[in-house]
Amino acid sequence: MASPAEFNENGPGKRPRPPSLSPEQREEKQSKRAKSIAKATAKRLKKQRGHIPEACSPEDVRWKDITSLLGQDAIQKAIEDGTEFDSPFPFKSEVELEVKAISSHGDGLAQSDEEGIKPWVVVVPFCLPGERVKCRVFKNDRMHSQADFMQVIRPNPEFRDDERVKCKYFAKCGGCQYQMLSYETQLDFKRNVVVKAYKNYSDLPEASIPEIQPTMGSPLQYEYRTKITPHFQAPPSRVDRSTLEKEVEAGGKPDWLQIGFNIQSQNKVFDIEECPIATRVINDAMPGIFQDVVKSIHTYKKGATLLLRDSLDTSVDPDPKDTSKDKQICITSPHATIRERVGDFLFEYSANSFFQNNNSILPSLTSYVRDAVAALYPDPNDPTRPTHLIDTYCGSGLFAITLSPDYSTVAGIEISADSILFAKHNAKLNNISSEKMSFRKGDAAEIFKTVSEFPPDKTVMVIDPPRKGCDDPFIEQLLQFKPKVVAYVSCNVHTQARDVGKMLRATQDAVAGEGKKYVLESLRGFDLFPQTAHVESVAILRLV
Ligand SMILES: C[S@@+](CC[C@H](N)C(=O)[O-])C[C@H]1O[C@@H](n2cnc3c(N)ncnc32)[C@H](O)[C@@H]1O
Image (cartoon, rainbow, N blue to C red; front, side, top):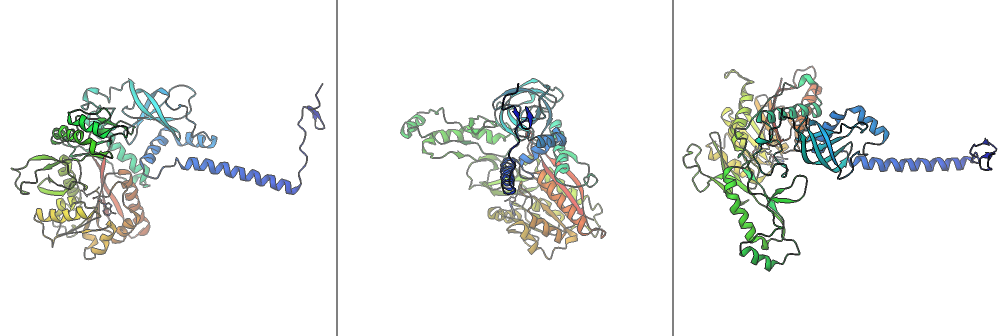
C-alpha cells in the first residue's frame, strides 16, 4: 500500500503538483532563474576568457596546433558538453603517451592510447612524433595539459639519435630542444612552421601563398650565438652578509648560488659551465665572468642578468676592408660598443641594443633579401627597376647598409635613439655618403612623412619589426604609399603571416579590377637559431 507521501491527488507515486503561481510570482521566479543562468554563464565565460589567448601569441599558436590535432568536431562537442576544461590527467600525474605531432614551438603533442579517454592533448617538450613518452602533468588548460618530459619509452629512430646531442644540460635547460634531430630534419620542421603560420594566420586563399622554399640553414650549427644572458639570484635573506663575504673571499661558492639559465618550465636557475651554441670566445670567458660574480655576490641586493657578447676588438681602428687585425673578444658591459663584420660591411652598435645573434648566417640572409628583390628585375637596364630603399625598424642599419649598393637613395627609421646614432655612424664607417643614406629616430609609421620625394613605384621597403609585428597605422600608411616591393623580414612568422595577409587582402579589395595589388612572390624560413625550434622568415611582396 502506498504511504501518504506516495499517494496524493495526482495518483500513487506521483509528486504533488506545486500550488499554481500568481502571474507576479511566476514573473519573479522566471526573473530569478534568468539571473542565475546569466550569473553562471558569466562565470563560465570569465573562466573561458581567461583561457582564450591573444591572437598570434605563443598560446594561440599552440591552440591552433591542438585544434588541428583534435579536430573542430571534438572541440565543439566538449564546448557543448561543458567539458573542455575537464582534464583526464590530474595535476602531477605521471602518464605514458603517444606523441602524434610536433608543435610550432618544438614540443611534442601527445595523446593517450587508452580506450575511453576523452580527446585531449598533452604538450611535452623533448619528444618527437611517433615516440612513446613518460611525462608529469604540471598544468591543465583548455582541452590540453602541459607536462614535464620524464623519459622516452619508445624512441622514433627515423628522427631521434641522442648521440647528436652536444649539450650536457639537454632536457634540463629549456632551450635547444632539437639537438637529437639531424640538421636536415630541423630545417624541414621549421619549414612546416612557416607553412602552418600562413595557413592559420594569413587568412589568404591557398592560391595566393607560394610554395614555401626550403629553410636556409646556418653555416654554424653550434658555437654560433654571439650573445647570451645567464642570470643569478641575490643572496637569500637568511644569509648573513659578512659570513658570506668571508666565505667567498676564501674561495668558496655558496650552494644556493647558481649562475646560468632556468630549468625547463621552472623559475629556478641552474649552474652552467658552458653553452655549446654560444661562440667559443663567450665560452672561454664564461668561467672568469662567473667567478667575478661569486666573489662579489655579497654586494648584490637583487638578482641580475649578465651580458656576454662576442665582438671584434674595438681597440683596433675599424677598417671595412682589412680583416688582418680582427680579433674576437667577449664584452660584458652594456655600455660598450660591439663590432661585427657582415660580408664586406662593418657594423658597430651598443652592447645593450638589438643586433641579430647569429653572425654566421647574416651574409646569406642579407644577400638573400638583396638578390630576391633583384631577381624580380632580371634585366639590369629595366627602367622600372627600383632605385630607392626604405629600411623600417632598421636597428643600426643592417639591411639599409648591406642592400645599399643596389640603390641610389636609402632612408631608415628606428625607435631606439642609440641604434639610430650607430646606424648613422655605420653609414660613415662603410663610406656611404649622407646624401645617399639618411636615418631618423621615430616610430616606423613616421617614415611616410619624410619620403615624399621617393617614387613609390621605384621604392623597395624592408620591414623587420619586433615579434609583435607591424601595427595597423603602419600598415595603413604603407598601403597608401604603396612601395613597389616589400621585403618583410620577421622573427615571428605568425605575426608576419597576419600582416602579409592584411596587405594582400587590402589591395585586393581596394583596387579590385584596377590591377594594382600586392602578390606574395616568395616565402622562405631562415635558421638563425639552430638546435632550437625558432625560425625567422622572409616574405617578398610585389605590387602588380
Ligand atoms: C627585429 S629588430 C630589427 C633590427 C634591424 N633590422 C636588424 O636586423 O638589425 C626590430 C627593431 O625595431 C625597433 N622598433 C621596435 N618598435 C619600433 C617602432 N614602433 N618603430 C620603429 N622601430 C621600432 C627595435 O628597436 C629593433 O631595433
